[in-house]
Amino acid sequence: MLILPQMLMTFLLSTLTIAVIFFVRRFRLSPNWRYHLWFLLIAALTLPFIPKEWISFSNHANLGTRPPVSFAPNEIAQTNADFDGNWTQEFAISVNQFDYSNLNIIFLLIWVAGIIVFSFFFIRSHLKLHRIIKTAKSVSNTDINSLFETCKIDLGIKKNVSILVSSRIRSPMIVGFFRITILIPEGIERRMTLKELRYVMLHELQHEKSHHTRGNYLFLFYQILYWFNPFIWLAFREMRVDRELACDDAVLHSLDPDSYKGYGHTILSCYEQHPDFFTVTNQLTGSKKQIKKRITHIASFRRNSRLILMKSITLFITTTLFLSIQIPFFTLAYTDEDYYDINNQKIITEDLSTYFDKEEGTFVLTSLKDKRYHIYNQRKSRLRVSPDSTYKIYIALMGLEEKAITPNTSSFKWDGKPNDYKEWDRDQTLYTAMEHSVNWYFQILDGRMEKDKLAAYLEQLNYGNKNLSGGAGQYWLESSLKISPVEQVSLLRSFYTNEQNFDPVNIETVKSAIALEEKRNARLYGKTGTGVVNGEIVNGWFIGFVETNQDTWFFATNIDTDNGSKAAQITMSILESKGLY
Image (cartoon, rainbow, N blue to C red; front, side, top):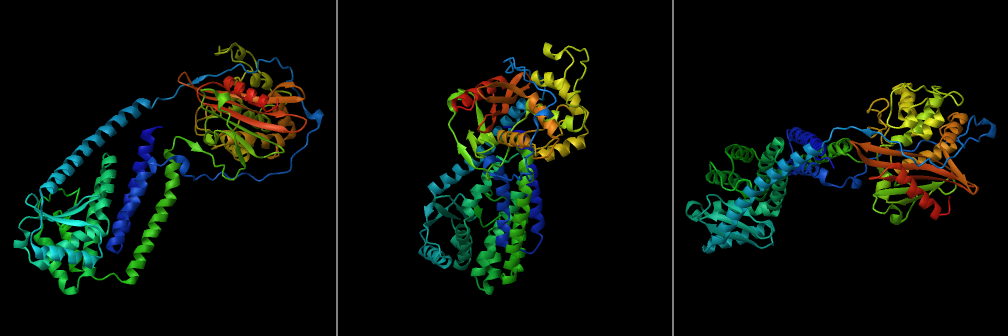
């Protein structure tokens, strides 16, 4: 998994979410719904940690089918029936790619180091608060205790919330996750009347009723996790303002209009220039800017009308839907793994692990008559990876359709430059090039077709992700073009039945070019493929089909850590065990 691309996309998605929330906050929303907007940011920040297979935004609709085309035997221009039994020999060239792993490790170390540092400060503040609670005393004033119980009843709070007094704090605050405690400064009863103390208690208890205390831990967790993003710090600073406004608004709704002014004066009397534990607690005081906004809100307070509530809910839902629409684009952009949706297919899962030994791989099988998919390792069968040399089947078909080659004239001259394999150092026809998987032949053929034409053919074939951005002659070699094993099998079946109405002669020409061997009334067709990046094998394919008198079976095998020859060996063992070949 590449952390850098994921974090970059999360940075963009979170920045978009923050921008949208700031924009929506400009409208007149109720303070409570204004605060709830920030949970949409939490959802966006959670996205990278959700397994990608849980989120399906795929829209890979199958193309409409057309009647199969029958072929006359005399239309086969040439065959490749001279089987020599050496078709499993592998021909693969290493592709050089920039290695992101070092950058990934450096970023990961810096990120984790930042998390550790900020977690240290949070834990230190939390432990200091815990020591204050341990040394705090119960309130001895019976009037205050009686008032506290009355406030709990007024707000309908039945949970066990305790109130303690401490000489080590300067402003009332509510703390805790499981055990909720309200702390008030020692001697506060000498500075405040019982009426003012009631406002203090209503405010702190309202935080508990609205679950602000526990929610604060959630926001702190994400602030530590995304410490490197300055917009997150800005957003959570504004979130704390909105949280206090929502709390004030709820308290004001529980008071009579004559008490609004007194409530505002109480907040001003508790103002501290540098409040203690500001980020890890919910407390009556706050920054100067926050206090100013709260007093302005209290001074202009009007009870929320039904119209304001409906407007707030509508804006919240609209914002949620807008951001939800954006998520698929960001998900597809940051993911390094693309999964094909097979929810509409009939699937039979099989345990074929013994054939794969220690290889991480998948096997997919279907047939003309039985269109169910027999799959080993369903997750990997959906994973799109580079087709490598298996794509040469379709380069050949497209080249024939475009008349870059013909069934009778398919020869390209060797340029005389030595290649990695002696079999490549000669003139090639479609048949020899397919047999020896000659890269330069198919790169010439690919280069003779315009990009727009290639894109149209990939669309017609519905070939994987249809991405040609990797460049001519390279996009199918561990680059931009990717396809899943399930799609490989489905595509082979539509190729075999010519559902896309290609020239039947061209279909038969390619089919004969990938013919491998024949035994006991069964004829095997297929193509291996191997992906090698920076000298390391990362991808092994064997795809094809078996014609029998009873049916035609289409298969695809893909493995991670070995080549196409190994994939072919695994496939042949499975086909033999099933009595198909």
